[in-house]
Length: 239
Image 1 (cartoon, rainbow, N blue to C red):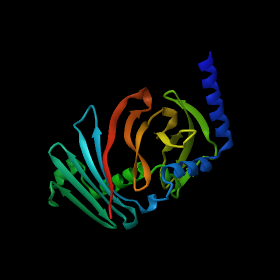
Image 2: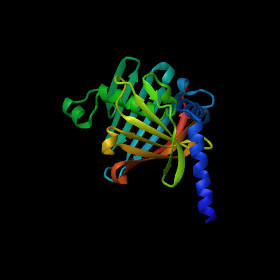
Image 3: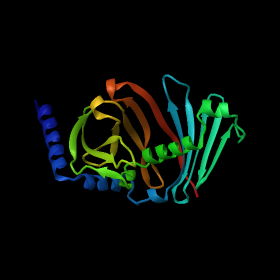
Image 4: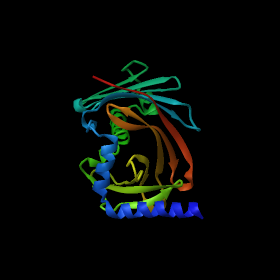
């Protein structure tokens, strides 16, 4: 009975806090936790990310980002292939196993293209730039903060949607109500269908003064089906 009362008081505290704080206020507190020095806009870093997927062979990706220079590069190693995709301002360079000469059929089969490179730039800068990326133009932050218990823990939940020209997904970001650390995010293409995925975040590390989750575990919303784990194995600054 004592533990039930304590749990009720915790939930009540989270609920009251959710009523007192607006969406933008919660976002500012979360950014103050993850990026206290406002370093994201000048981020220059190199990260080694390893993906473990129960239905596929392991994939290793080295991501290099120099945001002030509009530079982004991935080096993906999987099976017998090493694919390099580099975006330097408006210049795109693609390599397969060190060569820029790639047969069109192989490009298609391995999904090697500048369009793919741009998509992966958006993917990595968005996910590894959260919650700071929620300040980007075209992002609509819901003024109402809700409380939700997820996997047995109470959270303050921020809802983000996007202007039509930016995106159509709906995102929910789950923050610890005491520290404002981001611990879960979830997206839906069509929320009425319970599609999309949720990602559990753990083991924060600091890169260039920014607290970034080291481990990301991906699940389908529907059925809680496990998809994959991303492990940030190594990270360092770039000049």
